[in-house]
Amino acid sequence: MYKTKTRNLNLQVKIALLGAVAFVLMFIDFPILPAAPFLKIDFGDVPALLGTFALGPVAGVIIEAIKVILYTLFRGSGSAMIGEVANFSIGAVWVLTAGLIYRRGKTRKNAILGLTLGVLALTIFAVVCNYYVFLPLYQNIVPSLNASTINYLLTIIVPFNLIKGVMASIVTMVLYKKVSPLIHQEAMIAKRKTV
Image (tube, rainbow, N blue to C red; front, side, top):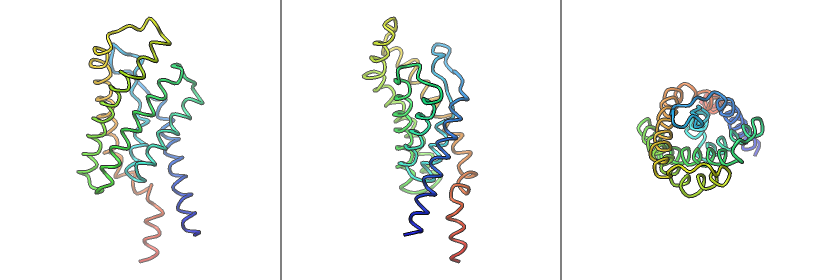
């Protein structure tokens, strides 16, 4: 019973720490598409992906939620929460997809496959949600926004999400082997004690 409580507390602390790191990384952002300078890449999804691989897909989704909640509390919303909801939901689809595939077999091949399919899933999800939800909501707030929806999705949303996904996936792959022992440190210590 005590070990279970300690394990749960350790898991919660790790999720909270990764969420805090993700939140801080959201402040380091930069635009990549001249046609849409308001869409900025940050590496706040990397801790969520690391957490997904190390702690499971649900942990990754919780890290995404912590990141967006903290960012909104500290920075506010410039989009009536539309951008924040989009950031969370698209990130959640990404980490869930990558995490569920990696969970089947924790190999480098499955990590790459999970990240690749995760990027494709987040891009498709972003297109569908922007078409049916986010863009109509933005147009209610900013009536002058009257760009061709299909053109916007194909020339802005798709490339942005693909570039963001590939960049964050590469950083995740580079960091995971280095960070994983730190995340699993107490499990390794417990294993040594039983040997």
